[in-house]
Length: 229
View: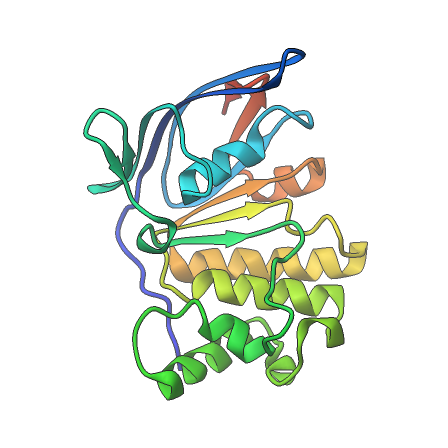
């Protein structure tokens, strides 16, 4: 049976500045600093506040203008030291709002794609164990369009954990599923975090989700940290 590998304490420390200017009418400046440890941190705030941009900078999809991002001594980005690790070296699990599964790959193949070590057989074995963790082993041979929204989201969650990540980022992962499925998935996400015992950063507009998951809650307003509790 596959077990996620816990650590004693993982501390994500972020200090980021980014200037977005698409045209003369769009001038948005982000300047955020925070530290989070093992457990859930919920990012809340209005649409356009910068929550998704923060996740994308942590993951390496978007490059900050200056600042640093590190998990303990593992440095993802440091403008002063000219360090900018590529996405595949950051060991970040990312669950996107639209799932972002590869449409031509099966459930098992989607998860196996994220496994870092081993041969094809061992990667598929680990993939199946993770699918079983989220109770979707029955979709291992199905491609995404043959899955329900809840099944796709469970596969995306399994893939996010497949690389034994240092942290997991979840960008409104349950916004597209029904209320009943959302409740079940929240329970499974909580169980996954407890098994991994690493920082999970969860973006949501849903107050009920924020109250349930938010061991730490950070409110982002116009590109800055307005409140941290």
